[in-house]
Image (cartoon, rainbow, N blue to C red; front, side, top):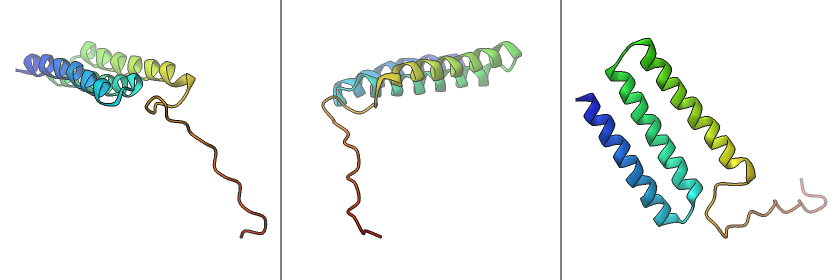
Length: 96
């Protein structure tokens, strides 16, 4: 039962990532959704096999997800393309 749930979660993760990519046009946002749902699939697999190897596999999945996301976001914000972030306007003199 758990194996089928993990397989379904993995398949739905791919579909959700594709839907986010098509809906927003942001590959970073789609990758974030995909990685989060793949992490959920890994944790579901951990619920099925409660040995040390299953725990190590889940920890490796979480670590890989964190490292991959850090590498992807090192170059800028994760917003949709074409969105420009402006710094806040300076406060006028004498504002208090």
